[in-house]
Amino acid sequence: MVITIIIIGVLAVTVLPRFNRSGYGEASLAEQLRSAAQLVQTQNMNHRGQQFCLQIESSYYYLSYISGGICSTTTYASRDASIKSNVEQHAYPSGVNVSPIGTLIFDRDGLANLSQLTISSSSETYKLKINSGGYIYVD
Image (cartoon, rainbow, N blue to C red):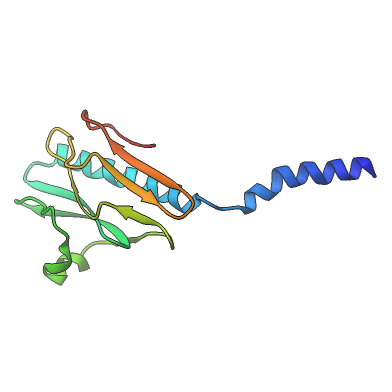
């Protein structure tokens, strides 16, 4: 009987935390945004004549570019609908917020106009940071 209780206790400690998915959506979104930011950074460093952007909206993000121009630091909500229809929107998990809302832009040297994005919900908070040398990481 004691052995049975010990086995059930060990199983409870190892198996039950796998069913608690608290923080998974936030961590996953933070890594997705890090990857997207690194892609935009690399594209801006390698493609002259095009400006690539990571657009952060209230409930989704998307990648965009303007050929021969520069990305705006304002949202595209007030612009032509054809701009938004040509990009794939990535929705945030339910209850997860990203701030600040706006455009993440990198220059030709890989340096960003923002130093941090905050990904948060009621239970977890992650920070996507971009240091002064252009290194992007999740903290």
